[in-house]
Image 1: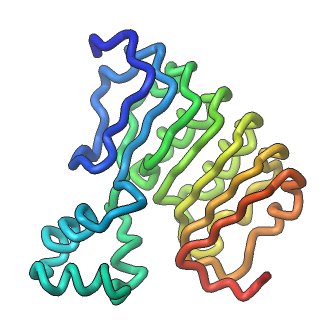
Image 2 (image 1 turned 90 degrees about the vertical axis):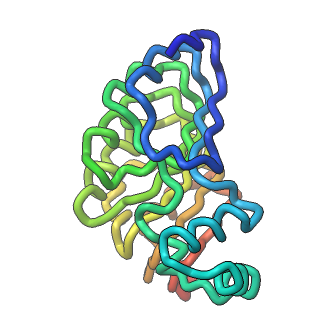
Length: 200
């Protein structure tokens, strides 16, 4: 809380699962990166070892040879961090990556009030919080990049998606792409992970 000049906080690859309340004192914070890095298997291996009881050989084999199932890689406790109450006060934030929102609706409301966000990456969207998340996204008109991990069919309620969004990543067992994607006239990058959609 005393790092008042801090502009970037990168806690990827750590075991931090909840940020302290004092983070709201960092009024100059622009970029918050959490969760595990997308490249490299060491941390994923550690997760399999400690969470699922894999031995070293099985964990490495599962990850290196592609044997790890989507349900393991998408465990709801995997890699996310929880924001404290009052995060809406961080008005300088441009980037939030790796935030878990399945542990209460308050954090979704906090994110929805950060109107200056350019890049947002969240996980934990489910049938209990998808409507509120969709409502929050509609308020973020400046978004340039959106990454969402969700359950099947939990993103269908976005009625006013960020119109200028050029980059979208959807991760989850999506059977059909949400209709609102058609409204993204400036979309140039679409990445789908662990989906079951047959649409092109």
